[in-house]
Image 1 (cartoon, rainbow, N blue to C red):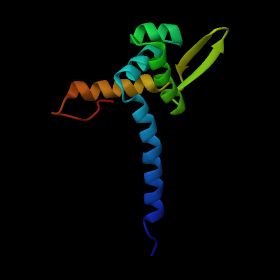
Image 2 (cartoon, rainbow, N blue to C red):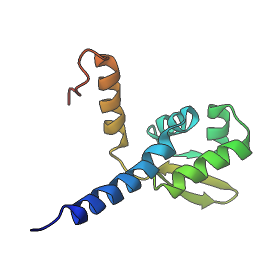
Image 3 (cartoon, helix red, strand yellow):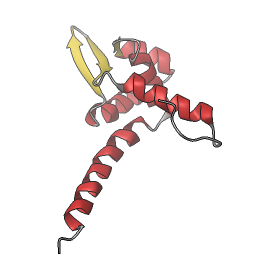
Length: 111
């Protein structure tokens, strides 16, 4: 009789991988960065001004997000430009917003 152990290991691995991405977004400043980048690429200076933090703090946030695969960057001259790695994030955030608007009464997404 086959056991569920291999399936459980696979589920745990997927959960662990997904948690890295979700944790990388789970900070208000990082969500603000994602929101800004959904409008288009930004250089570090633009993101620093928008986030209202110093460049060192912003760089740490960007590094966490880049390691998780959320962002890609490109150096052009003296500036580094960031953009969202996956074009489906706006839809993901739209879904989250629908859940928030539905509140606790009806926690289902309206997608």
